[in-house]
Length: 381
Image 1 (cartoon, rainbow, N blue to C red):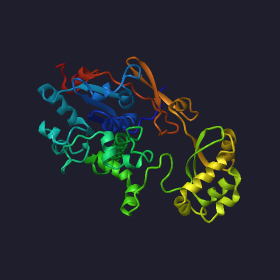
Image 2 (cartoon, helix red, strand yellow):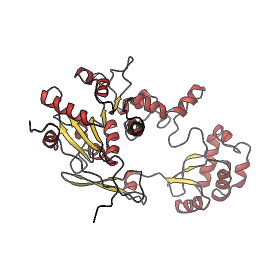
Image 3 (cartoon, rainbow, N blue to C red):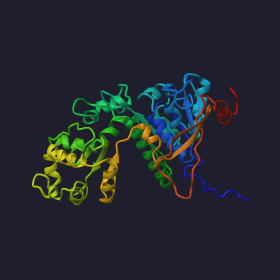
Image 4 (cartoon, one colour):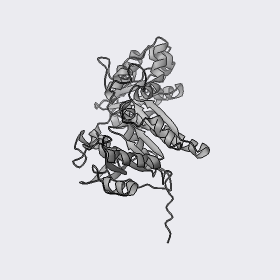
């Protein structure tokens, strides 16, 4: 009986990835998930993300997560045989992704403009720290450095000091932006027949995500660090129950505010008090607002408050530790095969109903070099 499983959206496309660390591998991992063949070109010593840790069945958590379903080819572009393989791959590639230091490829004789000129259908995506021109172009850029440089750290954490966002948010945001741009370019190629030369920087990506605090700062009202609270909405923060459990609540409009006061806090007059009647005045009087909400929370245990919040349809969340996430009822995982066995990781968020996906293994270093050389050069050199 013929296989009725539909082809994945990017099946048949070849992606050549000269990548390392997190941002570019995140982008190409999404392309691999969508069915593209991703040939990952690694230095002889391997992507340095392979050495970040060893918690995923003895391998790096970053590498296993971000390189599933790819082929690993070891390459030194200073060697003629490897240059020949690179050129053969690019000659057939649909997508080329690279995050080398600006100018590095050009010094090797492979300026992205020339690669695109040789193969007009190529969609090329180059990721940098601060762009490819200007005084910061040559500066090394990593996730935490961009968190600091972009101002993100200045609005993260508590009043005492700036803080790092607890995941590599700049890298992840950059990878997601790159994947989106590549998909756009591939769609446009279907219409025009021509590829694209995409350039994006980690700094630009993060500053784009910082648009709201940017606009507040431009208006002379830069947001302050307030921990697990919202700078422009009140009440939106953590309150502690009688039995010492923290609950984060979010009030988005005056209807919800009135229900919180009447049905949860049992203080209906609070919602029409002149100092708390609207979000604007509640933010102005945040300390008094929070104190009165906290007083209401302190009269009930967590189980009672959770029931009250649910009945009133108020948005809330437990302030979980990572151990709580591991057993969370909404958690879904996939298994990624490694040389040491399967590793369970969080499932990709986008689910295509009626078209379940399988996810490829994390490649060992240089595992596919010989096979790819035979395929593209017809030899074992």
